[in-house]
Length: 78
Image (cartoon, rainbow, N blue to C red; front, side, top):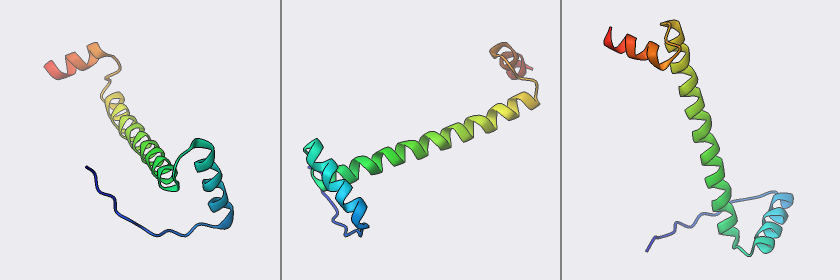
């Protein structure tokens, strides 16, 4: 069984009201709504990091003239 770590957070009134409305509309606890939001944020951050890494290595490959899989095969055998 997973354990939970309790944290106290402060929210501005508008966000507190919004999270309560979301929780009620989705039949979730406040904690579940916050957890979902944090997971979505983490997923987006990881996606951005992935694309940044992909962009970096794509630029490096282009600098070496590697534009296709065949180019990569030749480069690796070379």
